[in-house]
Length: 102
Image (cartoon, rainbow, N blue to C red; front, side, top):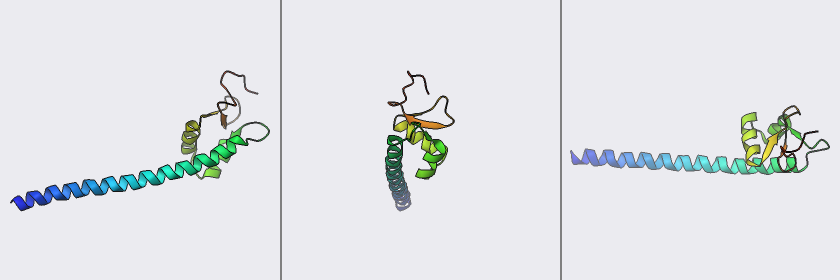
């Protein structure tokens, strides 16, 4: 009887441990991918071209992410979408919301 209870307890702890390790591995992989994508986005936003903006289509295509994931990373980099240009993004420090967009 006690052997069965102890077996259940040990099995439960092992399952929790395995789930914890799997979650850590997945989280670390995602963090590394985010880091690489942010590096590419930073390079692109640092060199935006003559208009000063980069399109979401270009940004997401280059980093291999969907629109939502790209937007999340851009916001983490302190970038914002243009109010007037069709789905274009740039740094807030360059395109302050206090200024009128051109």
